[in-house]
Amino acid sequence: MSSVAPLPAVRLTYGLLLRQLVTRGRVLALLAVGVGVALVAWAVGAADDIDDPAEAAVAVIAGLGFTAVVPVVSLVFASAALGDAREDGTLVYLWLRPIDRWPVVVGAWLAALTVSMPLTIVPLTVAAGLSGGGRDLVVATAIATLVGVLAYTAVFTLLALLVKNPIVWGLGYVLIWEGIISGFAPSAANLAIAGYVRSIITGLTDIELELGDKPVAVGVIVPLVVAVAALVLASRRLHSMDVA
Amino acid sequence: MSDWAPPTPHVTLPEPEPLGPAPMVEVAEVTKAFGDVVAVSDVSFRVGPGVTALLGPNGAGKSTLFRIMCGLTPPTQGTVRVLGQDAREDREVRGRIGLAPQQDALFDRLTARRFVEVAARTHAVADPAGATARALADVQLDPTETKPVGAYSKGMRQRVKLAAALVNDPDVLILDEPLTGLDPVQRNRMIRLFHDLGDRGKCLLVSSHVLDEVARLGSNVLVIAQGRLAATGDYRALRELMDDRPLRIRVAADRPRELAAALLGSALVDGVSVSANEMIADTSDVDRFGRHVAIVARDLGVRLREVEPTDDDLESVFRYLVERRR
Image 1 (cartoon, each protein chain N blue to C red):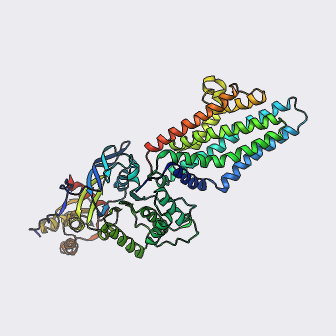
Image 2: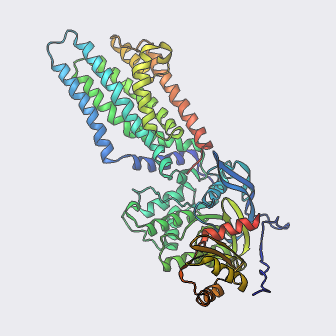
Image 3: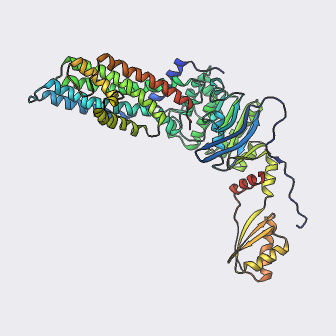
């Protein structure tokens, strides 16, 4: 009896969990959120009584897009990828196999990424275009969304293996830690993915944003390092945890 | 019945096995605690090829023990080896185990064929399509069915689980209540399949809380109760032991003290306790008790209102076996 090589294991896990993740309800609900942001951005872009349209456009993208759309979409799919399997006991069908743990984690993460990315990057870049913020904002939005989703999905994949209610904990991180606490404490802001993502926007548009005070390179590299670290930790957790 | 003596049981407490071929599953002094709750307590046994039934009531610790064997949860104390390895650490041995867990959840959006094929591929089976077809045939599921398993009945879902457990031709099969939800024909078929696999040198551990099922699964039985290994050995001797245990009967009567005294004097009971409106009798011969209690009551002029056993269930049988072990 042999074991499954890593790449085939990633493919198998990815295909299996992707099919479980894509449900009509989830996709439509989260698409509606993105469309909502695009509509608000269009309204801002169409308004002719705004003093600084570029600043307003950036505020909409950062305030709605990177506070609501990117982290919430990532949370819903990444926490479900392995979290649902853990919750209902089907994780045993991936765990009790001659497979290393990290391909299972990477496959789950890639499945979450596959669904999260189009539901965020498309509506937000469209929103950036409609907002009147210019080409720089569109490019910045695309890059920031890409980096943000990569990081958030990895962190929330780990979260789903650590806690029983990852949605609740994830929303607490997004709304309380990133939304409130980071605003008061610079040290806390270093642990907020949102700060790094906003730095990409600030750096590429020259428009200042709260928490967005880091160099662009830092804004790109740190979330990617966090993503890798989260996946490593998730693999270790999958190895050591109790499986239903 | 004054010269009645309990039969000598041929059911033994766990003993170390003599030297011979290495056991396929070896559980040594395993204890598992979840916080303050001890689910499994100091269990040791070894099993080799063939079918071994794990008998015990719900909540006895059977599923926990199976999870420990598969490595799904580590023991708090003790060691478990499957084919000489720890399934929690050894990737290769996980490919030689087939598990049909008790929980009902499957990947509901897949068809049965797809579910079993994924199991084959994640086990690195050389010919996943062929192995899938054989496994589905073994459990009599239609490989061309397009309905997802989420729409299946309980019995069909059970068969999907079994097929997924069989698809990699494992050396060790751990089946947690595998006959639940199956109709009698399917049940017979599965039991025959289990015996065929055991005859081919596979080690099957099959859990059940139904005595009749265990009787048909085979003669080698491990009885688990309250997290402990209460008895191990031949099913027929186990059944005799269970049948010969004292039973407790509640008798509601208008004059229970008089009745109790008469029954004690007639040696129909091993002991009695009396309260205002009833007596509780312990008897080793429930049939004789049942035939004579009404006669004794009639001769005394005592009115009987109710006669019922208070511990004629499997739970009390297992408690009895655990207490015997102590």
